[in-house]
Length: 143
Image (cartoon, rainbow, N blue to C red; front, top):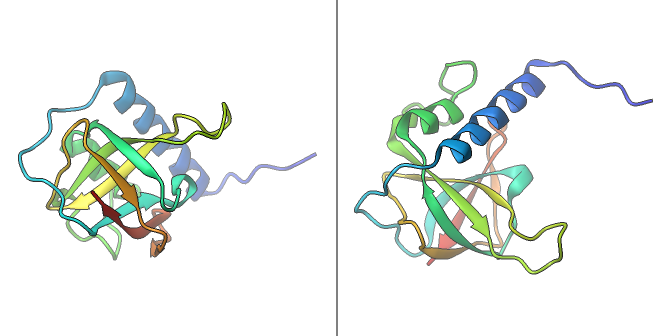
């Protein structure tokens, strides 16, 4: 029988997952007017990173939820001292891999830039660990 780890990181993951589900249930905010540039730096959670995969923007997260997702226990991490400078987006990967992977929805964070609902882009093949505390990868997107 497998034992489950009750560490802070697991609780943090579950809490953020609950916030994410709430964001999707309540909807997303209207998008801003700025747009992301080609090869824009982007942050994605490592467990939902699909390299070189097209995605569609569902909408933009409320600023307060974005800040909550980019903090640990209400505190900033070394890599993101100003989480309010980041814009969170709900994205849906466009994959044709059957029922197991079709329609994967996750988050993407851009610093001082936004994407509009319905925009399409793709993730880069290259990514590196940005924040192990938040489990975020640093990659780029191409529109």
